[in-house]
Image 1: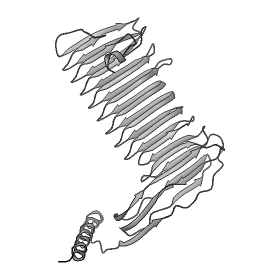
Image 2: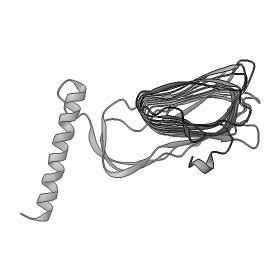
Image 3: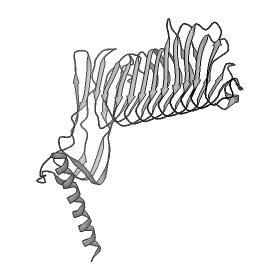
Image 4: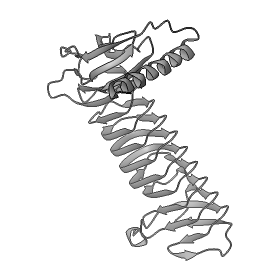
Length: 333
């Protein structure tokens, strides 16, 4: 059998598999409504929009990675960076990005593909770049990951599949990913919330009055963290992963640093004001390198200063290491 015949048979087999997939997804005979055709997607240009100094910018593009930065002229600039070339099996063309001026800002969205499609030969890279006034409030309801920097009006981002990077932000920030890690660097404001179903969380130079950092699977690392305000609060929790946290937890607050599976390393500066309830189901508790109990299952109350703030410091399976002298690097953090 010739090489051409073998290739033809493989392509035919792949088409049969695709057809069966269409059948399964569509709940009926595929009728081969889709067809193989060449795609060379060209994104339509978008004119800059004037929307004021503090617009509400809403973004909904489930297939694309979204990059948000600050414009240098006070306008909203949108560029569709999507590239798509090759041969695909599909019954519909790839939708263009739609950008509209709303009463309070700008809406950026892309319609979902209406029918099943499979890339056979070629490549695709789906991304958009959005530059906005720094005072904008940015809300991304769907995306495949995001990079957001320089925004002072607040951010809300939900990623269906992909990591989220947050940097140089002010205001209330809420970020989540169904599958991907999250990072927050130089974030200041009233509240920061980060949650991942599957991915680690990394925080650096974060200063907020309220913090929620949760991951269902992954580690949490926080360095130079400051929680301060009239009644500050913070929860850092992993269902499955270690925690390494170095920060200043202000007075009159309520805090939790915990994991269901992994060690907990916490550094606080000298002069901290905390009443700590430390517990482990299988491990040891030590303070500044000295063990408080010999058992591999322990619970201890540790008071630092006047103890005006309360903290739950816990792991179900792992050891707890607390350092109170402000020098964590020497202990391998």
